[in-house]
Amino acid sequence: MRVRRVTVTACVCLLVAAGGTTAQEGAAPSPLHGLALTPPMGWNSWNKFGCDVSDQLIREVADAMVANGMRDAGYEYVVIDDCWQVDRDAAGNIVVDPERFPSGMQALADYVHARGLKFGVYSDAGTATCQGRPGSRGYEYQDARQYAAWGVDYLKYDWCNTGTQDAPASYGLMRQALEQAGRPIVFSLCEWGRNKPWLWGEGIGHLWRTTGDIQDCFDCRRDWGGYGWTQILDLQDGLETYAGPGHWNDPDMLEVGNGGMTVSEYRAHFSLWAMLAAPLMAGNDVRAMAGEIREILLNAEVIAVDQDALGRQARRVRDDGDLEVWARELADGSRAVALLNRGSAPASIAVAWPEIGYPAHVEAGVRDLWLHRDLPRATGRYSATVPPHDVVMVRIAP
Ligand code: GLA
Image 1 (cartoon, protein in one colour):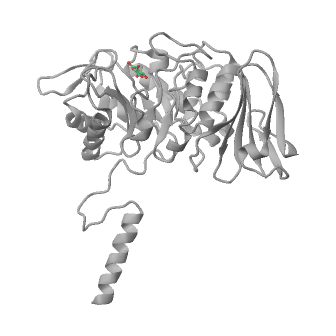
Image 2 (spheres, helix red, strand yellow):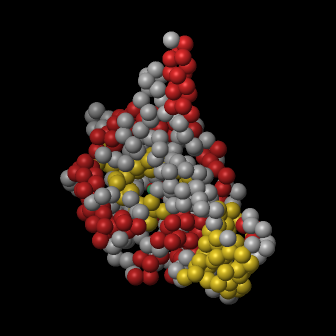
Image 3 (spheres, protein in one colour):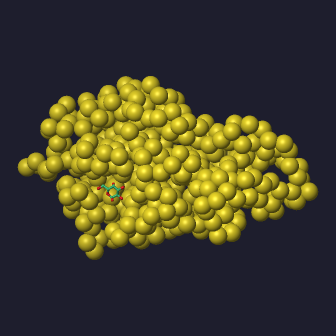
């Protein structure tokens, strides 16, 4: 009898240590646990289409993601951002725009799922979305149940029109509503970094925006708070310790292919987002992509860095004005290194092994992740000439 009791106790301890719950505790395991163990990848309508979203667009995008190889490269979630919702009915149910989404959300989710993709929607923690559509405040449980019934797999939850609301409490409430709805839904907090979500977001959401909205430019700043991607990059420096499997810093969606930057600038943007273990949410018209844009978004070696199982976000290990080195450790002990030239002339950028945590005497293999080529082995340091507004990205393995 005594021996038996000890065994049962040991089993309970093991289950709890593994993050599970026990029958004795009576609680079902959370449907939101174990999601986003690597940064979510997919597509979101906002950056390119704004409010011009429709059933037809989403279906065409899903088809394109299958045909152009994005799905097989790891892009999984097809997310409709703001403007799909127009009202609430007398019972408080959210009403989908009947003109733009005539077959309703469930049919659209089914269509996306049938293509091996997952389906996402957007709402807002306040009374209205950023475009003035109905928000979820006061309807959290009802909305979460609706999303689960439709087959939603991803919720982006914005922060407009929240007045004096408390951010952790508001996002925590929707987290609880999603838990009770019972469907595994990736929960994306879009609070723009206002209340330092990296300090409280883990356990509430799977990712949290760290800044205002990205713009399709290298280094611009908008009066209302929009940022070019290098400005967003600067704001990620120091946040690296908060990211890891299931809880990611989100420097916002990709602008790659939207027309405002050069191919080099897009290559650098994509490389640095992969270095940051950022969610890779394409934001362009994937139905009509130029070959050079496709080559960026589908670079399997760069995607592998983003999706590395260790989940370690890069640090800026060297900052020489316009010339920077970012590095991250990967699960196999190798390092991904990005040499970034923010200046307007070609420049030589070097990384020394001690800066990436290796002894200086070590010899290492160097692979160029854009040329898809092994370079000569190097000892102590690696340097390259980097074109203006461009990057050299390598994997260094002793
Ligand atoms: C905010 C978000 C954006 C987008 C828009 C939609 O600005 O930060 O990513 O969702 O709202 O209105």
